[in-house]
Length: 217
Image (cartoon, rainbow, N blue to C red):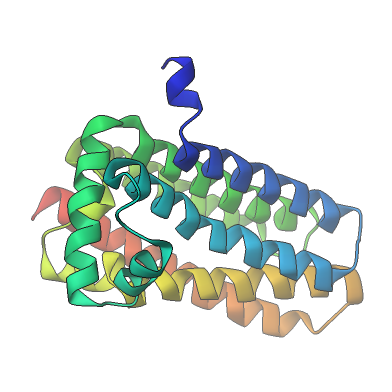
């Protein structure tokens, strides 16, 4: 990886998103205002879309606008076809890019699970299940390719569809933001447990879709 590679805007957005996630959990430990923490968690989730747009923009040389990218993310067929074409080109010109994106996702998610387990807001076994799930799924998907190349109907519906991608980010935001309120302002923990159960179930279901895609499809 040379200096030009390190300066790619898409990967820069991933690095910034990762750093922002780590900084946010530090604010949790420091018991900063949970409203600010919730705002930063939302910003971290939104940056996941920004790095994707930068990757497409670099390969399309600006012919794909952010509005077109958002329309594609919302399911617009014409915009989706155009964006998908440049995404595939981006994967070929910077094959490490999608893996860096996955690594950023994992780091951001791990630090939240680890910190909330460390602070005794969630049970330790939840962290263990997440680590096991991601370790095996990432191993299977590394052999198959990236999640954006899923072909089976089941995997696309559960994992790579707009509902699947958007839904998991919404549930992550609600869960991690609420757990911050539980730790800092002593909000009812049982609601947090419900959110954790929903998120963990969602994560496991998406993991099953990824394994299905890599082994069967």
